[in-house]
Structures are given as C-alpha cells and as structure tokens.
Image 1 (cartoon, rainbow, N blue to C red):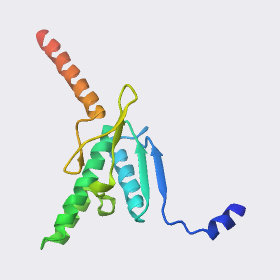
Image 2 (image 1 turned 90 degrees about the vertical axis):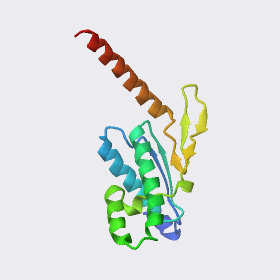
Image 3 (image 1 turned 180 degrees about the horizontal axis):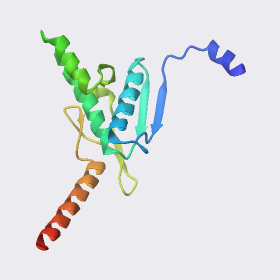
Image 4 (image 1 turned 135 degrees about the vertical axis):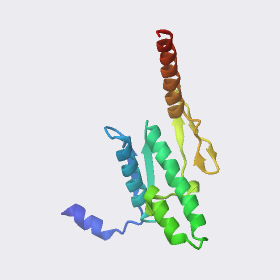
Length: 153
C-alpha cells in the first residue's frame, strides 16, 4: 500500500532494464524472440536503456540483425515500394525491434579479465570476438576429427 502511494507520486520518464544471460535454457529461436521483445520494450520510450550480459553468439548475431534492419529501414522510407519493403523487413526483424548502431556498445571480457569494447564495421558488431573464436575453434576440431575418420577408410 505504501509502495503504491509512493509510486503514484512520481512519474518515471525511463526504464533501465538489466538482463543477465537471457539465453539460459533457450533454443536459438527463443533467444531471438526474447531479444527482439527486449529491444521493442526499450524502444517504447526514448530514454529507456537495456543492458544485457551474455555468453551466446546467437544473441550477438541477432543484435547485428536488429542493427542492420534499422539501417535498411532508414533507406526504405525513400523508396516508392516502401510499404512492401517494410513488410519484408518486418518478417525478418519486427520494425519496433530495430536499433540504431550509435545506441549500441558491446564489450567483452577476455580470459584474463580485461574488458574492452568490440570494434564494429559500419555500425555492425565485429565477428572478431571471443564467442565466435570459440565457435571457430570447435569447428576446426570437428574438421580434424573428420580428417582422422577419413584415414580409417
């Protein structure tokens, strides 16, 4: 009751949403859906902020899609087929879940605990990050296993 009265006295102008590892126990498609919903709710109010911690390369890749979709959306508005193109875009990334690259900062912590900002390429997160490097290393190991298997024939 007291909390309700206190809350009624203040008008909140923004929301800071901190989400720790939203990918836990989720398939990649569910990770995409939750990320797009978090982005949509962040976009609802101009001053809303979203902070996510993750170990998921899928989330980083889906974030890249949301950023690229925002860049494409800006170009579509100048096109005569804009309605059809916006529909096609929204089939990939919901229009309310797109995000401008200048509002995104991605940091990573390496094995020694050092923190640094990931570089980007034209506003898109770089593929050169630890999560993708670990995936690449795993792929290399799989190729080595296949080469050993081939020698068995």
